[in-house]
Length: 467
Image: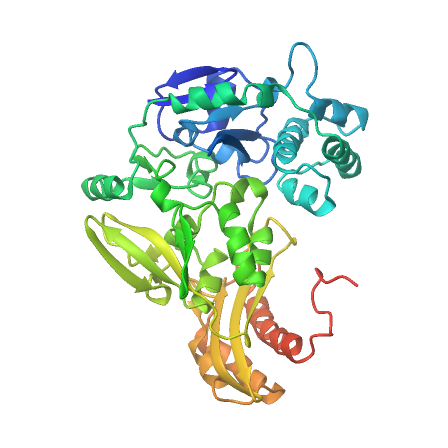
């Protein structure tokens, strides 16, 4: 049984667990303002907003309705474009889109409106960077971005209270009155449930798993939702490590990782759209064992480990022991990732360099992703962990390459030997993203780029560098 707030009242639904929010809205609720575009979380036409209690206030986040299963909305307020108009008047976000001629064919417009609605709730002053960040998951095929940005500026320069602000207290009261879901609400409950049902699929964000429904038209009869387990969403810092709960949304991880490892934070901005980051998790990114998941190579380079749980038993496993083969991991039946542990940097001289090569700069899957964690003292490499995604059937460390770097002078001759060693570490394959020859050449060139950036920091090497 799923209970959620929509249009001011509590809805109680008994639905298959693999029903997406988009399917429910269009087929069950008759709310067709939310559009289906790509059904893969790329276009943003299906963007809706979920509001949930955060202390004594409400937190508003955009999600892709096409990739969000209905159990994820339990205990939350589901807001669609139909909810914005109030007492016969357009919401001021909608009116700003009209006033700035920001809608052309109109198909993408509801998604943009919902992203701007959430932006205004979170950002009270206009910022080009923050607006672009918020709209990064919304595509306009009519190239109407400039007037959409104008609408965003009008909204944020003159924020207005709306019916959601006026009803916030009542909304909180109604959400807190919703009964507990049948899904686990603690890590202990999850451990018991999963041990009893080891064939069930665990759903944290579901942004990858949902593609089996929307793209491959499969059914997922046995699902266990992790959406209501606070213990899996905790992020803590100790003197030695960053501890990230396996179900913590990437958008919550970003500020912490950006402070500790700025390049990691920048990668997450290219990782996916805001809607995906609001749902997706490192636990899911790692557990699905994809060779092109961008989290894998970076966490390998940083020496991360995983806290695994099976029943009452826990074990810690280095990440480089976790990936066994294509989408095959060291997880035992009934075992799940509880936490990701990332060692904190012990040396200011140790540098992390991350390079993502993809067909478009943002919101795309990598052809090659490289992560290099390097420390040089007195001209000699004393620490080197190098990992790649897209170069093998799993995200993998370049052990032979590392051996050619360690203890050697940080100079061109050493780099060239390390480049040749990559041919011992990897035998990439060709696919529609890149040929194997291209992948190998790119991997070598990224190693060379790292050397240039570290030895000649004044040299601009990336398209994201500005003068």
